[in-house]
Amino acid sequence: MTTRETELEQRNRELEAGRQFAQSNMKYADLFDFAPIGYVSLDSSRRIVEINLAAAALLGGTAPQFIGRSFTDFVKSEDESNFLDHVQ
Image (cartoon, rainbow, N blue to C red; front, side):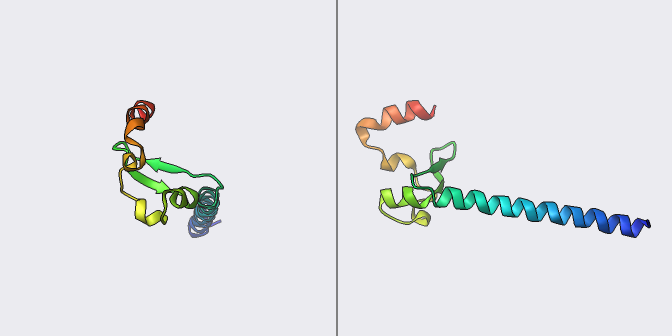
């Protein structure tokens, strides 16, 4: 086998691995987005990074409306200290 053939085989393996990773990512996105319960991912400042369709509907909007907003905006003031304790 020539060096060129070896390089092509290696490149094909890398492309296949990338394709499989992309498919796995799409499956995860579907599981997250279409889950029957609400999921929200927060950053260290408690800002919404990801939110699925169910959580967005519970909060009264669409997912893009909530990205970057502080999750504490949606927590009752009397529950905020419990929430902050929980995320610590």
